[in-house]
Amino acid sequence: MISNANDSSAAAEKIAQPDSEVDAREHRCPMPLLMAKRGLNTLVVGQVLKLLSTDPGSVKDFQIFARQSGNEILMSEEIGDEFHFLIRKV
Image 1 (cartoon, one colour):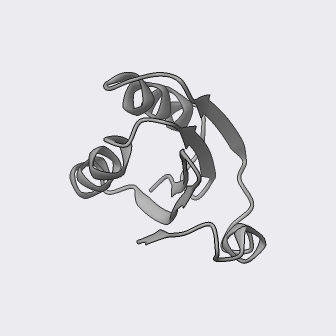
Image 2 (cartoon, rainbow, N blue to C red):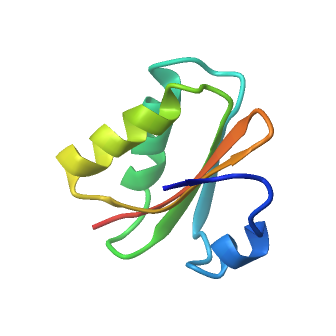
Image 3 (tube, rainbow, N blue to C red):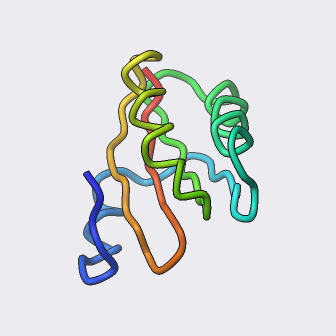
């Protein structure tokens, strides 16, 4: 799900508080995905990673990644030219 900046970011944050954050802004494919994998590797099952990206391809990349890895995308939001994700490690 992609929501626009008109939606409340505060409401999205209530889904789950992130346990860790990765700033992949200004990085292009495949770096946001690789940075997310590294970040998830530091978490235990059930914890949540927040990832920030400016790469438009991140949206599709993370959908595929979640299907293949089993990790859960709790939130995918576009805010201006940024993409924010909350990913739960499973």
